[in-house]
Every structure is written in structure tokens, then in C-alpha cells.
Image (cartoon, rainbow, N blue to C red; front, side):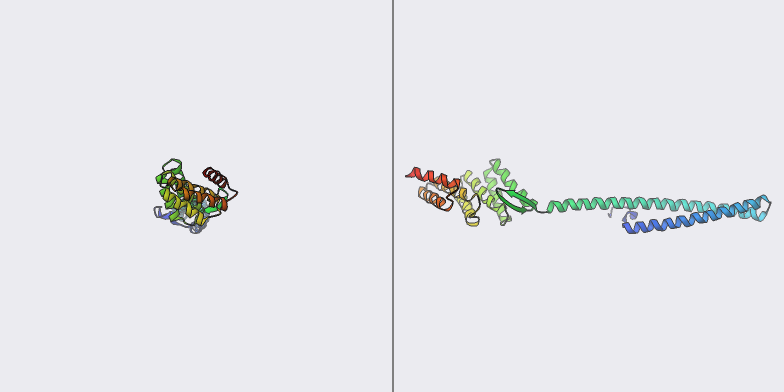
Length: 246
């Protein structure tokens, strides 16, 4: 607004009051002009009768009428300018409000429905999680693990947190960082034991333990998985693997 001309700094109410005032002045000048014209007509009639005083009065009146006409034209110009200023101010206010509404909407939490869970998340929170997922899909496993870790540090109570732990574990597993992968899966089990991915996390822990040449620990994890999540697909896979070891 500071960059606008001085006349654009009027508020709506101020500009409307100014227009009403000008309209009153225009009307007063119009009435004065009509009165002067009536007087002029009377003087013209006297002029026709050869009255010298009437002739001088006629010239004075003609000058006054011309001055009134100029003032009336100037007042009408000011009225039109103020009307344009009000219209421009209203347009600017609409633009400002629309921009403000757009910014506020961009900051509003959004509703997320993901893998059977519903929660709200801020736009930047959603964007951070999706950036980590994009890195994982792009097989940039080290970067994905870093992004998931950053996400969990910044949004520890997010509705995305259990999935961030799970996918971080998968990224670390793919990067062959098995010990840190186990740590991520275990955090998921400790913090979100009822999450749909919990049984898969246990199965993944056993896979990490096998990669670390710890078959005994893997067997114990499979057995715990069958006991804790007996009806899950991960438990069915654990039973098959336990059967192969017999």
C-alpha cells in the first residue's frame, strides 16, 4: 500500500465520505449556476431595454458563471477520481484477502488416510515424509534412511511416525546397515505394537539377524512373532521358516 499514490491510501469509508461531500458540493454549485443563469437571463432582458447598468452586470455575471462552470467541472473530475480510487482500493483489498486466504489454507493441517490410519498433518510434515518415500522409491537408500531419521527427529508424534520407522528400517536393510535397521524396527514395535506393520517389522528383524549370521536370534524372533501376531501373514511366513529348521 505504501507504494500507491496518496489518494489510494483512503479507506473505503473515507473515500465514500469524500465522494458524498463532493456530490453535495457539485449539487450546490449546480444550483448556484442555475441561479446565476436565471439572473443572467434577467440582465439580458434589461440589456435589450438599453440599461447600461444591466450591461455591466451582465458582463460580471457572465464571468462569474464561467468561473462556476470551471469549478463545477473540477469538482466532477475529483468525484470521478475518488470513485476510481474506491474501486481500486476495493480491488486491492480483495486481492490481499485472496492471497491471505491462500497462504492460510497452505498452513492448515490436512487430513491423511494411510494404511488404515487416519490423522491430520501439517503440509510441511506431509511433504517431508513424501520426500523420504520418493528417495526410497528411487533406490537412494542412504538418503532415504537419512530423511526418515530427520523426519522422526522433527515430528516424533506424527501420524506418519510408525511408517517412517518401518520404511527407515527397510532403507537401512537395503543399504546393508542391518544393526541400525533392527534398531528402527524395534522402535516401531516398542512405540506402536498394534500397528499393521508391526508383524512385518518382526519378520524383517529376523532377516537382519540372519544377515548378521545369528540364526539363533532369528529363530527366537520368529517364535516371538508367531506368539505375538499369530493371525498375521508374517506369522505364517515365520512358521514356514521355523519348519525348515527342524
